[in-house]
Amino acid sequence: MAIQALRGTTDLFGDDARRWAAVEHHVKRLCRAHGYGEIRTPVIEDAALFLRTLGETTDIVQKEMFRFEDRGGHDIVLRPEGTASVVRAYLEHNLHKTIGFAKLFYLGPMFRAERPQAGRLRQFHQYGVEAIGSYSPWIDVEVILLCLDILNACGVTETTVWLSSMGCREDQQRSAAQLRERLASQRAKLCQECQKRFDKNVFRVLDCQNPSCHGIAWGAITGSPFLLCGNCEAHFTAVRQGLGQNGVAFDDTQVFARGLDYYTQTVFEVRAKGLGAQDAVAAGGRYNHLVEDLGGPALGAVGFAAGIERILMAQGAVPAPVERPKRHGVYLAVAQPALIGRAFQQVTQLRAQGVQVLMDYDGKSLKAQLREADKAGCKFVAILGEKELEQGAITLKDLDAQSQETVAVEKFAESVGKRTGHACH
Ligand code: ATP
Ligand code: MG
Image 1: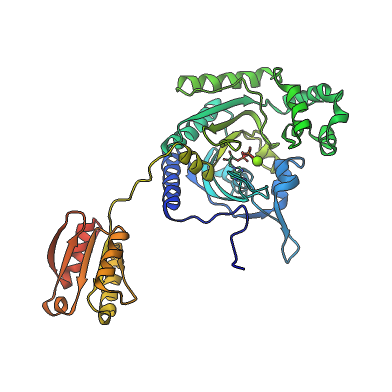
Image 2 (image 1 turned 90 degrees about the horizontal axis):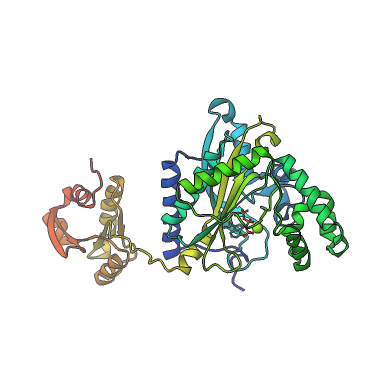
C-alpha cells in the first residue's frame, strides 16, 4: 500500500502555500511594526519544561504530548506550544539581564496528540508573541490589538473577542476553593479523572470532554464569576478601557478559563465566524509567574498564539480570492535540446545576478516550453537557438505587454535584470 501522511498532518502546496506565505508575511510585517523581534526555538525540548509550566493536570500534559525517550535516555517532548520555550530561551540567554523588557514573536509547527478532526491537527502551526518584563495593562492591550491587526490583514474580520480575568494566584486559590464548595454536593457524579482533578486542580474539570462533568462544572460558575482582588480588578478595568479607547469590541460577559495553568489576570480568545466547533483562531493572556517558575526573577508577561490552519479555514469560510501573483521572472527556452548546456550557463549567470529564471532540462518542444513559461507565470520568455548564438542576439518577449525586442547575447543578463527590476552588476 502506498505510504500516506500520518493522520492529523497535512501537506501544503499550491494556492494554500501561497495563502500561507501571505499569512506569514503579515505576521512578520505587523509584529516588527509593533516592535516584536523574531525568535526561533527548537521543536524538541526537555519534557520537564512543559511538565513544570503547563500544569500536570492539563489535557496537554496528560494526553496530548508527543513524548519519547531518546537513545541517551533523555525525556523529550515535541513542543505542544510556544510560550514555555520562549521564556526558557529568554532566561537561558540572559535577556532579563541584557535587555530586560523583551518583545518577541515566533512562528512554527506545534504538536499535540489530539483526535484529528476539522480544525484539529496533530501537527499544526502557530504564530505568537510574548512581551516579557512588564505588568502594564497597556501591554495586554497592545498584544490584543496586534492579534486583531494580523487577523484583519489576513482577511479574518468577522471575529469575537472573549475577554476575562483569572486574577492572581491568590485569587485563583480562593476561586478554586469556591468552585470546590459549589461542586462538593455533586462530586460523586464526576468521572474518575475529574475526581482527581477536583483535589489537584479543580479548574481542569471545566475542560473535561465528558458532557456530564462539563455541564456540572460550567453550571457551577456560569452567572457567578470569580471575584478579583482590588489590584487585579484595577488591571482588568484598565485593559477594558484601553481596548475601548482603541476601538476594540469585546465580550467580557462569558466566563471562561484557559486550559493551561500558567495564566494569571487577563485571558482572551478570538473566535471566528463559520468555523463550527473549532472556532478559536487565537488565544492568549498574561502569565505573571512563568518566568519565576522557570528559575528567573519575578517578571510580568503577556502573549498570544494563533493557529494558521484555522486562519486559512476562516478565510475559506468567508471566501477571499487568492490573488494571482503578478507575472515575474524569465523563461529561457531552447530551440534544440543540444543547446541546453549553453542555456544552462546563461541561467546560472542570471541567477547569480538575482534574476528569477526557469528553463527546460528534458528537451521538450519549443511549444511545450512556451506553454510551461505561461503556466509558471513568467513575465519574459527568451528563445536561444543556433541563429541567436551565431548572430549574438536574442529575442526577449514580454508576456504582459505582448511586445518583444532583441538584445545582445553578452548583454542578455544585464538587460533581463533591468527589465525584471533586479540589480545587475
Ligand atoms: P482549542 O480550544 O481549540 O483546543 P486551545 O485552547 O488548545 O484551542 P491554544 O493552546 O491556546 O489552543 O492555541 C492557540 C491556537 O492554536 C488556537 O486558538 C487554535 O487556533 C490553534 N490550535 C490549538 N490546537 C490546535 C490543533 N490541534 N490543531 C490546529 N490548531 C490548533
Ligand atoms: Mg486544545
